[in-house]
Image 1 (cartoon, rainbow, N blue to C red):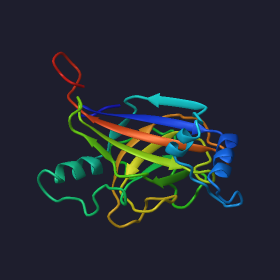
Image 2: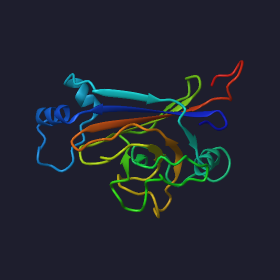
Image 3: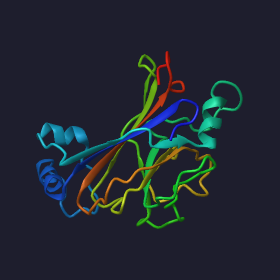
Image 4: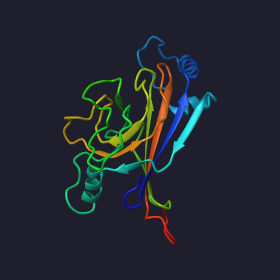
Amino acid sequence: MSMGGVKTSLLVRRWDEDQTRYAIRRLGLDPAARNHQVLPGEFRKMRLDPYSVTLDEDCNMLVQAGWVALLGGIAGTSIVNKFSASFGRIGVGTSSTAAAYADTKLGGDTGGASTTSYYQLVSGAPTIATGSTPPTLTFNATFGTAVANFAWNEFGCDNYTASGVTTQSLANVIMINHGISSQGTKAGGQTWTATVTISFGFPSGSGTVS
């Protein structure tokens, strides 16, 4: 789904439990720890390729709060916490209900159930590519072994500063996009990463860049 020439893709990379366990041992991490977050670069150094990679193009919308935040950066009131390495999360959830323009949270975000939603702090500052055609904004997050172990049916990005199960009732938190995309079920012990790329172009047609 796209609105106003804005499109979003979701890229998911998956490493299974055996790969993750091997990486944990190689990194000298405590195997008894509850949650391990092995980053993609660390898997690459060990030549451990993901067992599955999927890309879903044009699968979500910018919601109203996202448009207000974007337009406020041009004229009006800017958001309190701009997206950065410290303020930004990718959330995933179990709901497959169609995304709506007025959404402010994931459908699976029921106010505290870790079995239906989880928001992971981004792995670094969002990447802005203004020289690309069209320009893009990209978020990356790594979901460790003990989190988001449920069916991934939806995703969205917000600007909170810590990982957790909810975005409700948090001051100055804005979810900018919401998409529906069935990605299968993450199992305990696995490592999955999510890359969300938002492209800003024009409506499709002759002479456009979208």
